[in-house]
Structure formats: C-alpha cells, structure tokens
Length: 351
Figure 1: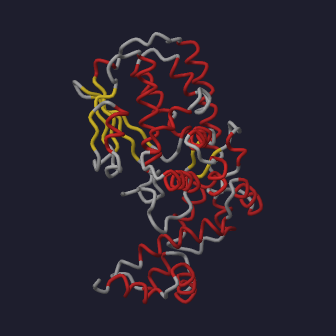
Figure 2: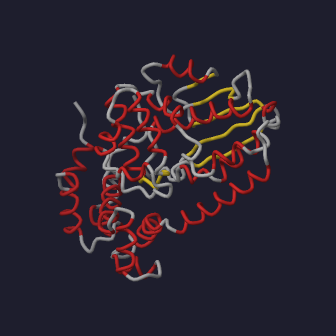
C-alpha cells in the first residue's frame, strides 16, 4: 500500500497537530483491545499531551503513532474508527463553533479558516461550481513530511459523520470523496462507512458536496455562540503562529545555506534573538538547532546527489559546507557511503 508519510530521508518537519487529537486515537486502540498508552510511548509522545489542551505534537511523531497503530492492528483502514472517540473539546473551540453555525457553507469556511489548529500540515481550499462545492485537502509544503493515509481517512470520517449529525440529513451530505491513497486492503469498509462515491489513487484529496446542502439551515445555529467560539479560535491561532519557531528556523536555514554557513549564531541574529534564546525556544519544542540543520542537509544532500549535472563540490557549497571533505564526512555518516559511491550506486543499472 502506498503511504504518503513514508518518504525516506525527510527532514525534521515544522508541522504539528493539536495534542488532544491523540485522545481519540488512543481510545480507538483501547476499544479494540490494544494498549494505547504503550503504543503512544513507542511513538515517543509524552502522555501529558492527552490532556493538555495547548499541547502540539510534531508531524514526525504523529505519523509514527499512526504507523504503529496500523502495524499493531493490521488494519490500514484504522483511521475510519477514530471519529467515534472524538469529543467536543478535541479541536479546541472548533466543534462548538461548528455546532452553532448557521449553514454548511459557514461550517466549511470556518474549517478552512482555522484548519491549522487541527494540523498545520493540511491546507484546505473551497471551489464552488454551479452544481457542486469541492473542498481540496492539500499539503502546504510538498517537499516536507506528509500526513499518513490514516490521518486523512480519520479527517474525512470525522467530517462526514459530524455534518450528517448537524444537518439531520437522511442522505449522505458528501456526494463523493477522492483519496490520493492507494486502495486499502478492504475497500468495502470505506464504501460502507461513507455511503457515497469513493475513488482511490486520485490526483488530490477532494470532498464533493451537492450545492443543495450548502445553505440549508442548521437547527442548532446560534450566531452569538459561534462568534464567541470564533474569538477563542482566533486567539489560539495567533498564539500558534507566534510560537512557530521551528518553521522560522527552517525557512532561515533554506535562505542562508546556498551562500553561507548557516550557523546557529547567524540564524539567531537573522531572527532577532540571542543564541541562548533560540536554544531555549527550540528545546521547549523538543528539538535542537543541530538536529534541524543536520536533518535538512541530509534530506537535500540525498536529493541533490542524484542530479548528475551537479559536482560534489557544488553540492557541498549549496548545503553551506566550507569544503567538500566536510560534506563527504557528513554524507558518509548519513548514508554509510561516500557521495561518489552513493551516486554510482543510484545510477548503475539494476539487475
């Protein structure tokens, strides 16, 4: 099965998911007879994230948890059941804002506006035609780590069931779902669960709604409560963006690396803070500057080395190394091979 998350040699991701989402995953594992907290520990995730409403979990660790859940259960459709264990506070104030929304259009627009609260690794876009409304789920950084298939499955499952409950519809609000993932082991599980057209191996993750539902009134609508919860969401999102230090460091490294050594001192100065302050902020996020730089170089090196038009010396300087010998030592640590040996192995005919 194709899994978007298993891209080898991916650098430390700047993306994160709200920590309370873990609760639903662990409860799903527990309900199926597995030790959820034990699997959480295998993914190197602190159990305090389960109850801390302000915690964020890095995409690297979140993907590891999803992969372990599939490995333990043997079910690559594991994500479908997670929606059953979501509680109103799982996504901060977003669920309450949805319940107080006036129409499906308002729900979708609000979800798009605040999707980063759930995960910064997903970017939603709404496109409306004369008969249909399409919501695309894309990734803001194509070269960065991608969410797992199961994370996308869980998001789709949660959205489909929540909308049906809110609109009290006797028919499925979703008209069709297009998944980028390859077909699961049990496609019938998906067809039974969603009760709409399902397409796998699609170019994009896409959710299609009939326009007849877009402006249908929602019985639980309460504009005042919706506004109150939207303010809470706005405040949370503002704090999240302010604290996004890992992403800021990654961007600065990418800017500086082709022309100079991206030292921690230089990056700190570029971000307008002391080296000690940057060290502290990164430590709070559970990463170090050295790890971010090393992972970024490793990822780019393994990509660039496959481009035969670039010399080893050119690659060395593009990655901010002082000389090719320093690069070669690092490359051998990453891959176990010298750059030239690795390149020859990649380009030699496979038998």
